Image (tube, rainbow, N blue to C red; front, side, top):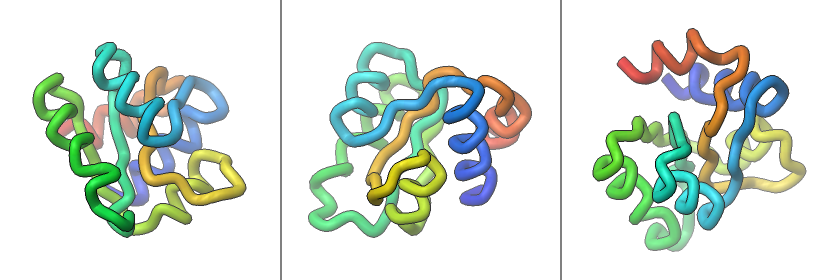
Length: 102
């Protein structure tokens, strides 16, 4: 599931639209624009991202937890690590989104 999430982020980055960072991801969830949210597990302190899975549950958005913020940053095309990414438009990643939504 982790690899599918990274793959979807990479596809959405080039052919769709993603939001990066806790604030942008939170806004995308609250506005109902996020189709999938990916959160890194190795965040310190945990309080930074604790609200994201709960928000996703309230809005009915699939939330995937991945082990590494560095790998998440690379998948999102960033030079630094990122703790959260929201896929707003999946672009060419429609099949990956369907698989992850199951």
